[in-house]
Image (cartoon, rainbow, N blue to C red; front, side, top):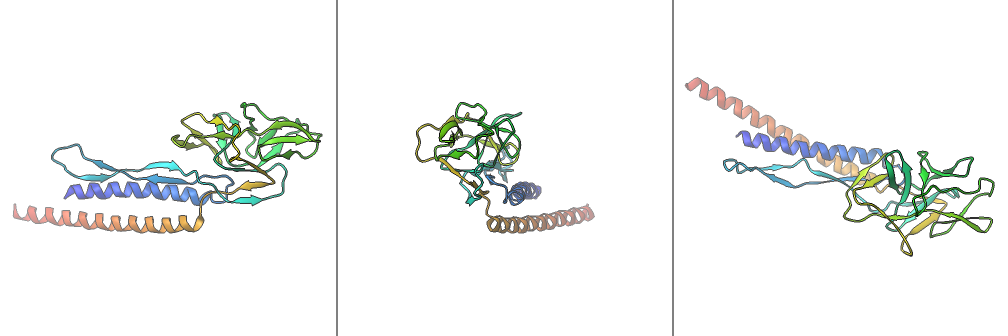
Length: 241
């Protein structure tokens, strides 16, 4: 009888983790370039020979990488990444990757992200342009021009589909496999004067949140019923002793 309680508790752990992931997604549905989090569920089988019981695992979180909508801003320092590629930032955590293409230029001409981190070129170096050279023109391949001359280039990086991603603040991620610069790939590039929105769909996430909340309540009701049954059984056996 107690095994069923353990199974129910393990189910609640999986549901709680899923609710946390959904809540974080909803909180960032308006964050440019944000990648929503999902949870994979597996089954853990008890290793005890006498307890042939399956327990729901706590699940494994992962970051979904499908693209978000392209939003036109007409700001020359905004870029939206198209295709399977990422921008790179230099942060105290090291080199991180993002799809948030909102940039700002310092008085010295360095291009930085909205979080204040240097935007990197394909060689992993900060991008510095002429602060007196006017608004830059950014071509589809990331090359930056001022007054008709190329003055730099936005680095685009490819992350292996086998890499495990972790969030690194705002909408950035860190892969466990080093990303590689994209070279001569016409399927990826940037769109100047636009940004990419979050890939979180609010309606879908709210539907999931309601479904998970109901499932949690059902498991909770089942556990309470099971606990009451166990209590009554103890009382009955105790009275017959």
